[in-house]
Image (cartoon, rainbow over all chains, first blue to last red; front, side, top):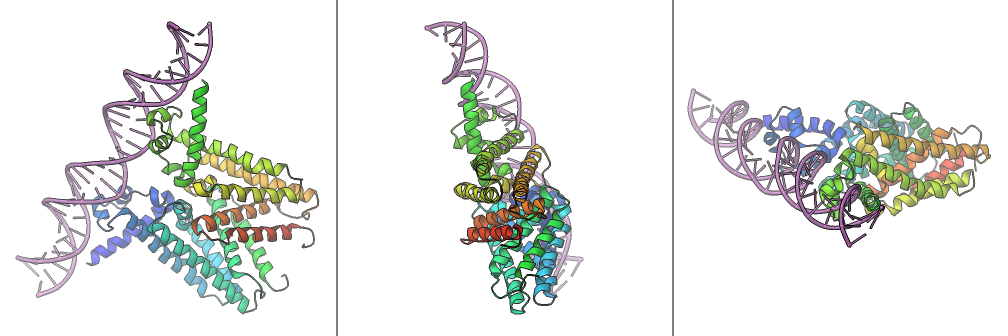
Length: 199
Length: 199
DNA sequence: CGGAAAAAAGCACGGGCGTTTAGAAAGAGC
DNA sequence: GCTCTTTCTAAACGCCCGTGCTTTTTTCCG
């Protein structure tokens, strides 16, 4: 009973890496099994279908994301510092994943946007939660007086997320060295505009 | 000699639609042939391999994009109006493609970012050209005095592109009704910041 | 209209896919 | 240490993939 759960976890860990590179659809059970030195059917037995494997990958990735990005940011003081930390943690998350394919959610987003099903549903929920998290941090910044009263926190969250997508695009596809600089500068401008009376 | 070129074109047209939905990798020759009521081998004969089919799809899509997005924008007056037009034309392009999977370049970007090869190379070139185009429009706006002198036009182009990616994400994955409003509002803010002395 | 050339179809291949089933190896608890 | 259960393997399935080869159909031109 313990051994099973252990390999199950190990499979998911490796699957997240592989899926980041080749996508959730591109990931093949045979290929994943080979990487783990496991038989195809042995691996398959852990998940009843490829779809549920995909869903479990997304769930495991969400848990990892929460721990690596959100939790550290929550240790920062309420308000702008925490807003900043969320952005920085995400950049770190993406950069750490560079060798293995970048943020899996970004990859999955365009892959699943036309593919109805449980995997898509799960991804949508994760993305909504993430945007809510960003918006909530901004809301707190308003409450703390770090941002001015009429900042539209949902718009702010959307803009912030767009910058993250832009970074992914520039860094991963175009291999643009200035990507990080650009992302930070844009985010600074976003913060500046949100603060009371300009800077 | 003429008939061949005709079907070749028809194949690419439909392939762009299909690839927008299922991706360049997900697109299968058999599936495409069936949609066109053509034999698999008959279709295959037009392209010597799947890779070159993918490259031709990207090239055809680039031509379409140039005609539908860039050319109309170039009819607008130099400076801010043209910058605006590029943004608006892209939104139109994306919205027109909604029923068939959204902008193929956005889909291909995350799909190919870890897949070295001719298709990726072609896509990178297209994206660089697009960013250059955005930057050049901004440069003209600076020259015309619509934007202030020390606007970093490459940063501007990057930010604008990030907003477009954000729109795609919100509209296609999250089906967010406010996506378009958000995108326009962000872009307005971008323009406002670029104009001499605030508004 | 007839014959050369081009285009499309038909068929078969080797291989990988997701999935199923039956059985071997390994682990757990008494 | 034996037994029962869990975990893993081996082999096979039907299916679709990209890709060649051969043949038939269509198109073009003198």
